[in-house]
Image (cartoon, rainbow, N blue to C red; front, side, top):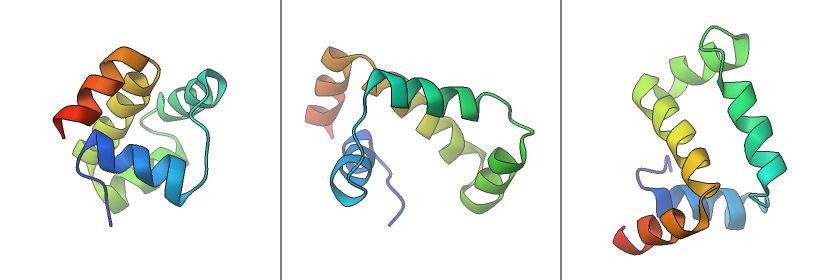
Length: 76
C-alpha cells in the first residue's frame, strides 16, 4: 500500500518498517531527497510520481515538528 496520508505514512515508517523518526534520520532523508535529479530520486519519482515524492518530503518535515505531526495524525 502506498500511503496517502501522514498517519498512514507514519505507521508505514515506524510500525511496518520499524524505523525511528529521529531528527538525524529525518535530516538524512531530506538531504537525500533534496536533489530531484539524483538517481534514487529519479527512480522514486518514476515509480511513485512527483506528487508523492513531494508529499513524502513534506511528511518528513512534518515529522520533525512533533506538535504539527500530532495534529496531522489526528486529522487523518
